[in-house]
Structure formats: C-alpha cells, structure tokens
Amino acid sequence: MAMRLLPSLREKKRYLAFEMLSEGAISRRDFIDELNRSASSLLGDVGSSECGIKMLSFGREGGIVRCAHTRTTHTRAVLATINRVRGMRVAVHVIGISGTVKGAERFFGRDSAFGG
Image (cartoon, rainbow, N blue to C red; front, side, top):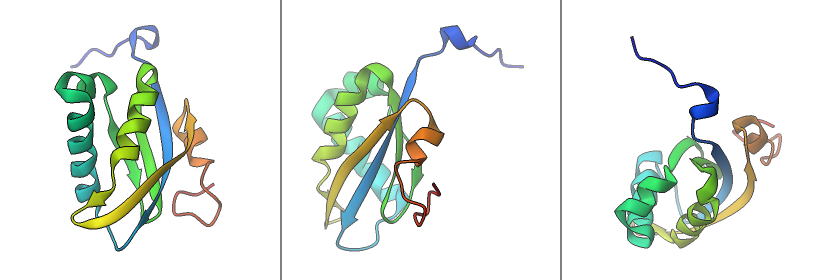
C-alpha cells in the first residue's frame, strides 16, 4: 500500500487553459509530443522536469495543462513556442490560469467540449 503525502507536503499546482488554432485536426498524442519537445528545447531537461507539465484535457479548440505553481511563466513560454505539430501550423494562446481544474474549465464557454 502506497503512503499518500499530506496536503501540506504536496507541491502546489496551477492549471493553464489554452486555446488552439490549427490548419487541421491534431491528435492528443501529437500535441503532447510537441509540448514535451518544446519544453526540452526551451528549458532543457532539468527545467522541463521542474515545470512538471502534464496535459489534463485536450480537444479540437484547446485544453488544460497542469504545471508547478512557481513555473507558470515558463509553461506559458513553452506553449507559446509551439507553432507546428506534424507539419501543420498551430497557434496556442493561454486564456487563463487557475489554482483548480474547475476554475480552469470556466475559461471555456458553455458550447465548448470542456463544459462551463
């Protein structure tokens, strides 16, 4: 049985909601690969691991990324550097940052795939 950390010992996280414009359909896997490649290229291996970037939800028009609360500016920079995924042009824009997933989902409209 794995021991769980007390909430006071856990690392704080932030959730970045982003919108994405692309020339065609992009799969979740391809976007995650490009996100990791951009983080490694911009921040290096140590910097990208300190950010702790993880994709929580992804849809045709955007998604939510989790990161360490002290590394939100680095994570925003990583998202901003993504301009191509599998040869298709892409524009990624952070629309909001929240301390909870529910708060990040509120940045998307009601007609979005993420609810609202």
